[in-house]
Length: 422
View (cartoon, rainbow, N blue to C red):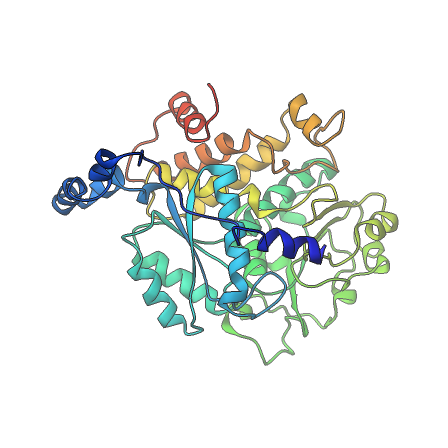
């Protein structure tokens, strides 16, 4: 895998992305329009009305993926240069799944104020900002300040993308096992950006906040802890248990956004009837898939891996969330839009799966059940279902700057954008 991956990235041309022109550049007349003197005309139009930047440039379909490399995958603070392959990879997914163009920008700073200033200065360039691989707790502050001070959507995918997909998976898992949101005991192992966002979002759909028990690398967030950052303090619980082994007993739901092999079969066996285990650490989950299934035949299990059923993969969210936000020029990605994306994703998984998608995955049938609670990443229906739900929620919540065109017109536009025949 290592040699294959290094060859993949280094073969000419190096990296995974490039810039290509979208207009003819075949002769001198084309160049006259593309640059001097023709380019002066759109410049003057935009100078008179800044909104025309969306008419005459690529701003409306351009996202900036911005990192400082302080929390890259599970690799930690490896720096902005080392984070660039991930940002290029993210750019590929934006383009592949939603037709969105991307510039990846790696900033050489760990100062939140410096990063905030740099991103704010980029607002004229981009239609949206995807923050990526910025460590907690700084990421919470950075996103909040940018969201409040910019008129384009700012979205930290490590937080909200994971939360949106996880919430969708949870909603569908509960349909299968019949449990109620308000009665769940939820244990979250990990207390970083994704964990906090997941906790907040599952509460929005009905989980009792007081029934969420969170652990970090040092153990349970309880009253014995005197070392907690403000982002963790609201999750402190008045219980004596300190270890995951003790806290997970009787739990209905385990959500792992931490590290490999922190859970064993005995822990899974100690959970409540019909447990839900989302072991999302990548590339290796908190408990290997086969061990969890062997421990509890009644478990509903999801991981972050593509070689197991129920992959909780952020690619199910961020391309389509940005697509919907860009297309109605939303100023934000607010909670209404995130919830709309999650519910649309859950709804889609319950619909009949087209034969061509089954064939693409080499199976005869895919149907809603314990091994299919969230859609597959290559489901072509995702772009319309998620993007339209997000766009409608933006309009209804008052953050859109242009109206939703209607389902038929929007589907036609998306097909054109993706090069699909109607």
